[in-house]
Length: 361
Image (cartoon, rainbow, N blue to C red; front, top):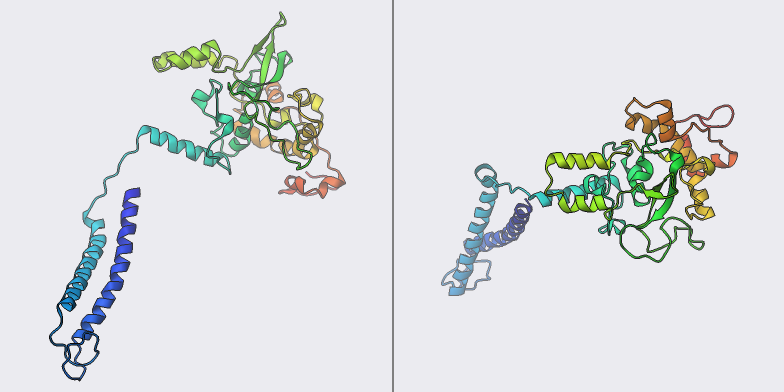
């Protein structure tokens, strides 16, 4: 397809160029055949009189111009008739080319800015990515961007650990860099730069908040299945040799404690951090950053879209306890006079009416 477009462009350029020469040729030929009264002359550039005894080079110019005219006619005829008589052969892309193209489209569908090389995807990844990819939330277009942006900072099992099999009371959260890439700075996103107000720049774009299970004997078990885990390493090494049935059995084993519906943003971004799922300050977030993740605007925004998320993702079989675990309790976000004029509170006014008490319904 690309070669066809390039070939058509060449034909167009040639056609335009030859058309200019064609006009020149017409003028010269008309001039040479003109019957303007005047004495006979051998001057090629004279505009009157009948031409006689043209020099050899004049005939050569005439032949060249006629060649241009004929070439132009051939090219124009080919372009007009090729669509009716010439069938283009469609070349099938290779499997890897299709995969690469789909990967590019997937990035474009999820993010406004698609970097050529994503630093956070370097190094070792959780075994989940081998099947689900770097952007695993793809089924619901309306929420997938919001959910996929968290995969840079949060491990899969942090949100998808099944509360029925592992109660939240048994969970502990820590930053973990399992990429195998050495870093010196703190995890990205934990603090603001006091001078610029942006997030601090650091070389640690690989650490994620992962969940550990506290056992009765005091030991902790990492829930995230990394490439270094024995079962994951064995699966990665042998997956090409496994039958379809064996691969299915391995996936079931990996999904034993996985809840297909993950916890929503309202579990972490709450005004009262003590009621949140993730303890931001204990995880090393600065005071300003922790407040930025739990302020009224953020908490109100995710609360507003909680029902929207539930209608898109929930299966309709969840109990009240399941709903509480996944999206948290219903919280009324107070609206102060200062927030009404805050441009960051734009989301409150979208399609809503101010009620008599001064809040937003």
